[in-house]
Length: 255
Image (cartoon, rainbow, N blue to C red):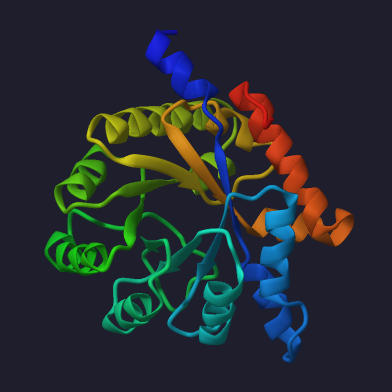
C-alpha cells in the first residue's frame, strides 16, 4: 500500500441515507405516516452525513412536498436523485439542493436497474450538467464502472460519479470478486480524472465492507436495506450498525 493510498483509506467514509422507501410505506396507505422528514432527522441523529431522495416522474415515493420540507428543515446536505428531464431541472434549480445525482429512469422499473448511458446521451447531459453547475449545484452521475462512461462523465463536467453496486451485490463467488475488481478499477480511474467517487445500490451489512475498503470511494448511498432493517431494529439502530460496518472496513472511526 502506497502512502497516498493509506491516507485515502484512512479518511472517514461518508454515509448518505436514502429515505425513498419511508415514503413508499407512507404512500401504500396514504396520509402522512411514516414521515420522510422525520426519517431524515433520525438519520442525522444516527450519524448520517447526508440525505438522498429520488423524485421520480410518477412520484411513486418521494413527493414535491417532501423535497420542500427536506430543504427547509434538515441541516444535512440533500442529494436529489432525478432523471435528466426539463421538469426535474426546473425543480432542482428552484430548490438548489447541495447535489443532484442524475439517474436513468424507466416508468415500469421497480428500482433503478443500471447506470446512466453518459456516452450515448453526452450532448443532452452536457447541457443539463452545465445548467445545474451554473446554479451552484454539485452534479453526480450514477453510472456503471465502465471506462467509457467514467471518461464521458469527466468530459461533460460532472463533479461526482456514483458507481452502481447493484450487480456486485447480486453476484456470488468468483463473479462477485470480478465485479469488485471492476468497481476498484472504476474508482481509481474516476479519481485520476479528478472526479469525486461515490458508490451505492443494493448494499447491505454483508456487501458493504469490500466496497467501503476502496480508498477512492468517499461516500456510500444506502436506503432500501436500512429502511427494511428498521422494521426489526429501528431506523437509528440500522444506520448505526451500517456506520459501524463501514468504519470497521475502512479502518477508521469517528472521534
